[in-house]
Image 1: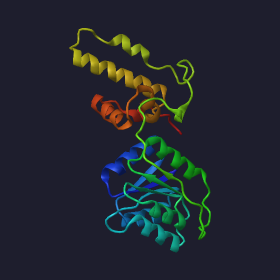
Image 2: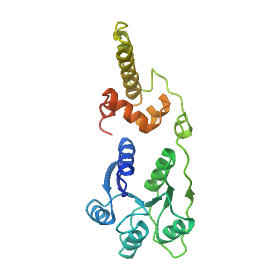
Image 3: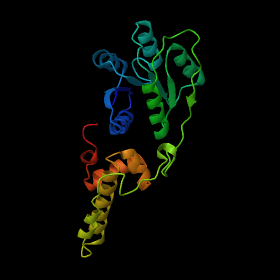
Image 4: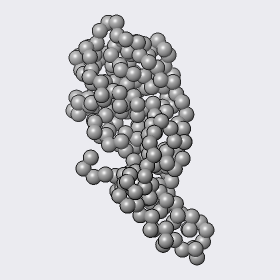
Length: 231
């Protein structure tokens, strides 16, 4: 578990990244501008920062320069933008950014970049820093991919899932109510089996992650109660 600071002036981006990273077990702090980012950086000392380039008060590259100048760039920083040029990405790398993600950010690229950032020990910034690899945006796949290339055995992957709940379904219900009841049990089954991991449930059910969040909210299913405790 890591402490991650997300800096972005778009509320929708902040909320989505918070949900995704929080589901992965991280503690997420949010800042909507450079002023809030400075305060959060000082108070929490994050393990990693996701920093948007274009912000209304102070842009991300300027804030990165400020941290580098003041000796505060002792954590990995991943830059984000939907409009930045290659020159901007190279400049951010020269200053000390670890990586660059282009919006809209693909789920697997986000998780991979965060994992790489958290497992890499920050190095002193030198004038000739290695060129940064730019991750181009790709649509999030709704099918199973290499993020979790393994098969799950229902008997061993998790404690006994509540499959017996299907027996409680009534065929006397109106179609809409019966469908909602089935979907509720269906998603609870997969959440139980995957220990509450929304990433793996999205892959198993073939739903895009934001759609899965909306569906669970609509059905009144709380994913957090299926998460493993003490991890």
